[in-house]
Amino acid sequence: MTITLRSRFVAAGAALALAGTLAACGKSEEAATSPSGGGSAAAQQVADQNGGDCTPDAYGAKEMDLSGATVGFSQSEKEANPFRIAETESMKAEAEKRGITLETTNANSQLPKQIADIKTLLTKGVDVLIVAPLNSSGLEPALDAAAAKGVPVITVDRKLETGFCENWVSFIGSDFVEQGHRAAKLLIETTGGEGKVAILLGASGNNVTTDRTKGFVDELEASAPGLEIVAQQTGEFARDKGQQVTEQLLQSNPEITAIYAENDEMALGALTAIQDAGKEPGKDVQVVSVDGTRNAVQEIVNGRMNGVVESNPRFGPLAFQAAEDFLSGETLKENIVISDSQYDESNAKADVGSAY
Image 1: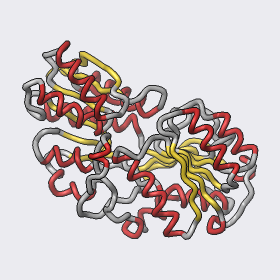
Image 2: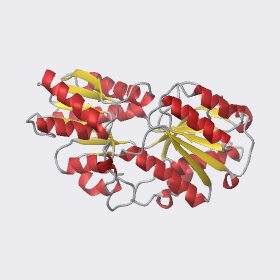
Image 3: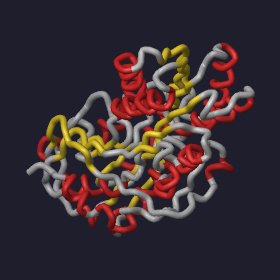
Image 4: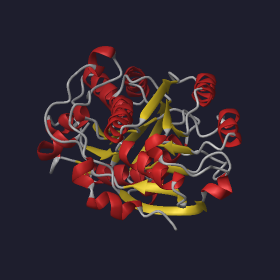
């Protein structure tokens, strides 16, 4: 039968909430060690399941009990920003809760290393792989090796372009196009639908950047033609790069009145650049972003940011449950879409404790 993660996790949401012990800040090592503060972290919940179906027979996987399995987790980027910190900690916490052996690797933003990491995990004999892909393509040599061994691959946070039920069995993550739509709506509301906008694009080569851009641009074109996009440049999802790019954009386009950053780290870098340019962030230049990190939400409370669309990184419970069900013979849907909240001046102060 088809797995119904929604009912399982909505009912168990409170029990699956992870303790608020995740580090909460930025790209720099100093920021990455800042404590996240109080409040309980919000567990992911399923909003939708769609796409094709994948069964163990179709993939070539053997049924087994997850409690006796070894799970491998391939992280794509260094745990130096809040999303990656929270994502990895969520995997470790869920493995510990279930009493499962977890082998972890980190590709440090290098595609060849992630390919090698996955092959190393296979050599160690993992029974399931959970992969946070660096890019939406390029991992085929490693994923094909997993499929050849009958090792199911569940991807999280970034979707692969091809290979469903051939070398991966399900994707768990956000609706990134919808995140772009929602960020645009926040900016339309806070600006009144008028102004000059710059977009800080995420890293190239993955669907997160493409989809968050599409959703944002489509929403502005449909709902706010008075918000003109005057510049788009990648900040590579990094705080220092976001600051550097924003400095350049404000020099070449001093008329910019709003910035859409495709993650919080770039937005936080942009705040510094805006202030260094003699402008007041949140007022002279309004800023919205996507992620939901503790520091970004606090900047809404401080009046320096105007809105944040959440992208919940706590994949552990859903990923392990999907693996358990698949190994038990159940069908997985191609896409398991999670629900994300958002923050603005109406709720940031009350909800900052649930940010990561």
